[in-house]
Length: 155
Image 1 (cartoon, rainbow, N blue to C red):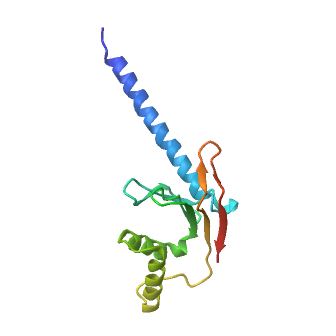
Image 2: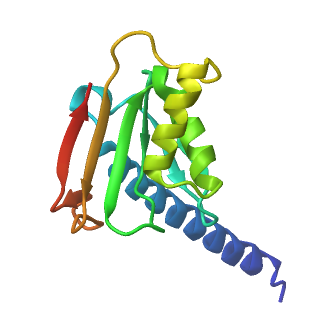
Image 3: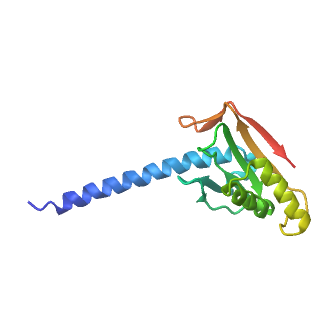
């Protein structure tokens, strides 16, 4: 009996299930990240998430100028953030500094100094940062919602 069709069918099932699992994981990351976004900006937002090495990866491209980042599973507590594209240079520099071992407050101070020195660009006009966070907050996969969290907007 020729087993090739059976093997191909099994391989297709394995690869399909793997793709579905990845899609489900990405759906959870998108839900987490968008939990900080205003409803009217969720649909077109760009989504970033942490990979296994703690680096950012693009989960979904966006077209409305808003970037949202899923919770970092390597840190205690829960925090997602969304920001307008005008802040991308500032936020990317903060990610670089944290990857080098700086704390969050150290990056804020250092970036402020870089802005003052003219080596880091910053938005000229108003912009908003949206944060969903909490020490006891968590993402519930069944409901697709973040529980026990707070939401803050910084303008």
